Amino acid sequence: MELNHVGTRTLKTTRLVLRPFYLSDAQAMYDNWASDSDVTKFMMWEPHASVEVTQSILESWMPLYEKPDYYHWAITLDSVPIGTVGLFILNEKSGVGDLGYCLSKKWWKHGIMSEAVQAVIDFAFETVGFERIEAHHSVDNPGSGGVMKKCGMLYEGHMRKKYLSTRGVFEDCDLYAILKEDWERNKKLPHHVGTQTLITKRLILRKFTPEDEEAMFEYVSQLPKTSPFSSDQPSYSRREAHQLFQQYILSQYKHPDFYRWCICVGETFVGNITLTMLSDTARTAEIGYTINESWRGKGIATEAVQAVLDFAFGTICLNRIEAHYAVDNVASGAVLKKCGMLYEGHMRQKYLSMRGAFEDCDSYAILKEDWQKKKQL
Image (cartoon, rainbow, N blue to C red):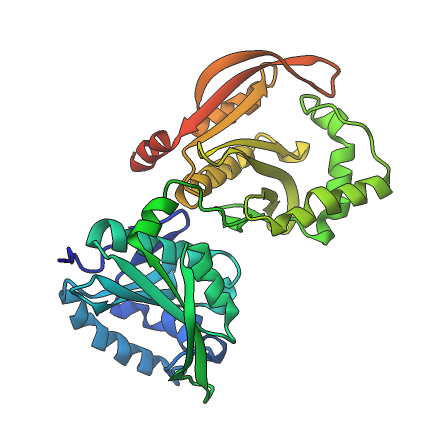
């Protein structure tokens, strides 16, 4: 077979830009990961002793970018390099590549690495034409293996004393790989990754924590007055509210297809947003949200909904997102329109709201192809 080598092209994801390294990245690379012994613990290279070491290494990489078969990206968030991912050819004739990556400790457990690796895997199969991508990780570094699993790679075996790491240990490793046929099959279903932290210009969308329970209880208790268009629900005692919060929010985060975010401005709870799967086969979900009364009219809902749409289409690979709102709740409809959702129909008496009315609703939806066109404008 013949690979279609195109060199290290810039790749864009929901949150990231993956691009070639620049000489000007030396300070950020040194500060964010290259000098951190926690990051390099399982690597074969020592933490950099100075930024001059980093500068020298970058200088050695620059000529390599002239080669069409060199694939090495800086992972950038808000234009700042926070890590690296490389795809190295193991067998040109057979189309086999090997993945390697590392990330700033500050961004561990935020889904950043999975997002970057998925982008590289997509590029490797779709553009370059690889047939097999493999990767390995020290058995003492299970977090790295978690990235591989999230990206559809399958466990293939155990390698004893694969390499000598900077911690002075010959590392036993687990081997994972993904074939082009696996990738093509996986692309037909959502890539469920669970509720990941999403960051916008003003907001942090994250999982709820036990510390959010009191604010959530206070918020829900005010809904009959502040959000009369919300679905009617019985009032709960503090004890009942605790059980529901534990059962229907916190305990659900263990499921990879559960998506519910606490919307924060800094540390302040301002609302919540959910993405509910309707059909994996059709890759369809419904989005719903509420914003605290004191934070309405500031574009918070629009910013949060757009972030979730980007995540749903760009990371989970959904095809359709639906939403509906009571026709008397004009502000909610405006949010959907601003986010590119299109009117699809009118539903009579869709649900009973807190104001005691059976609400007539307008239905809106956006397809992945609509989202892609909007992103190109």
